[in-house]
Amino acid sequence: MKLIKDGGHRLLEQDANTAQVVSEMLKDMEQNGMEAIRRYSARFDAWNPDSFELSDEQVEQAIASLPEQAIQDTDYCQANVRAFATAQFETLKPLEVEIRPGVILGHRHIPVNAVGAYIPGGRYPMFGSAQMSIIPAKVAGVRTVVACTPPVKGQGYYPATINAIKKAGADRIFVLGGVPALAMMAFGIGEAQPVDLLCGAGNQYVVEAKRQLFGRCGIDLLAGPTEILVIADEGADPALVACDLLGQAEHDPNSGLCLICFSEDFARKAIAEVEQQLRMLPTRDIAVLSWGGQGRVCVAESQEEAVRLSDDYAPEHLELHVQDPGYFHQHLTNYGSLFIGEETTVAYGDKTIGTNHILPTSRAARYTGGVWVGKFLKTCTYQRMTPEASREVGEVTERQCILENMLAHGITARVRIGRYDQG
Image (cartoon, rainbow, N blue to C red; front, side, top):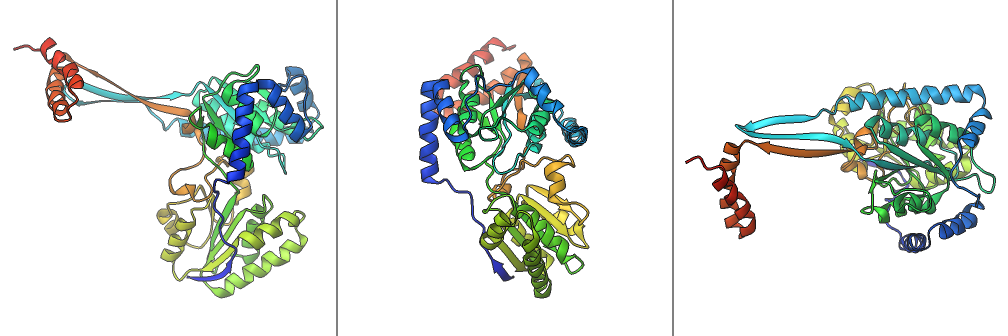
């Protein structure tokens, strides 16, 4: 492997200052409730309405203010997400098996009762996140989905986001951002009831709040700055590769950008294309920082080495601009979502195509996938037995318990041996 450009790959690490700030905020809001939530919302977002929850009338007004084309396009995107989530759900079957005579074991997939969905606003109004968190939860059978999205600072809310949240199926909509939103949903402050699971991406404070609230409720995953890795061979178009790298660069100055190719000539062409396109990019102020600080380009000696390098990086998004995608599809193991061929791109997955865009970052793809319908289900086992099977299993169980000196456990088996003894 030859490194042509090394901008590093910054991992999402727990920042001590961020952790302390979030910890103090959560403690304050748990103790002081809505008074503290209002104080923080006014301070950070210049937003302190009579009610953070939108009424049906406010939701209808927001939707009515949108162009019809915007509504139709959101419907199109949500139909794709719902279709894929439904297909995923249909693969999750209950199980019941008799593993030996009279011993019946099984499992059920049970949805959590309440989900808190956070739809980020920040630098961009990412209303596409509404369908990514709310629709899979509803397809899974979650009874109550509470959605929070930050206000447009001091001005209210973004109508397209409200439309997306409503159409996705949220039961309640709150205009509230950041740590206060997560605290309200997790603790059940004010008119909100505590949720069982928090879902959705956000800034470093949102991520840290989810980290600290885990245990009080569940979370989907900890998602940091976005990432893209492109594997490109000599048949790829350097201009298209550069375009896709910059498509993610505009997210954040810490966006991870990596290209793995197979010749120094292609690497140089791709870098030149990035530099040229950067000069014309409307969001270059952010993109130039992520490319300069996080951009990485390396030349692999073989397909096998490219797979090793990519799996070590474990990117959130992985694009294949190669003539033999089958090899990579078969051998790659660490990624959040895979985009096969130049015909598809990360933006399709982020916005439109139907796969989920809430994905693992910072090498978390080594041990988890992204949000999907299964994130909102608990796979719970059960067991039942005949008297004869209970006696047989009880004899083994009692001996095992005696070996472990867990005598009270053994007694529970012994009484059943006696109860069901036929001899």
